[in-house]
Image (cartoon, rainbow, N blue to C red; front, side, top):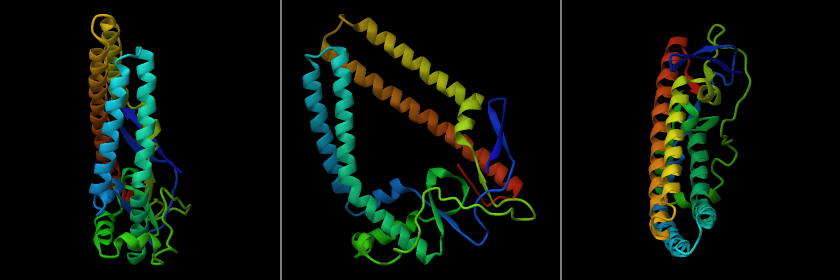
Length: 262
């Protein structure tokens, strides 16, 4: 089931078109996986290892780009990104398993039946992140993945269960079609156009610099522009997500909802 999203003047409102998941007797939790990972005792050493590896890969790539064409440099940059991403998955794999095992234990203790990623929850729910970090920091926290505690507890990401309407015909949990909001919200489209315009401007400036500066300088400019665009994209996404959460909270309070997810 879903919500109807009405886009008005750059913002949006939400109204019910049907019942959705969950029951009042089934608590729903959420966890900030990134913060939980950062709370793992081994996180600093893993982060340092990844940083050292990435710096070595990037330094080698920059040296090789000095004798490459722009197209070759672009292809090499993509290859290096894939290599670093694969290394990150390898280094963080054990930590992720520990966090998930700790989460199963915490969910079992608090009788939580469903656990969502924090960014899937716009309003409500039970934050389990601090409890997970405490389990990871305990003497046997690193062994949680091999412990039988809580193994029978379902850990689910966006695990939905159909149910009848609650609270006198109103569902207690709502769902927002975030993709539709992104596609139809005037505010989201404004942000997207702002980013696209900057990307077009950067491409034009880099094209104008061809043959005017050395390959090393051109690559340095390209890397700097890429960082600027990445930060801009992050900031615009953060602003829009904050707006979405504010509106979802207003709707939840007005409709008497305990939780809104995406």
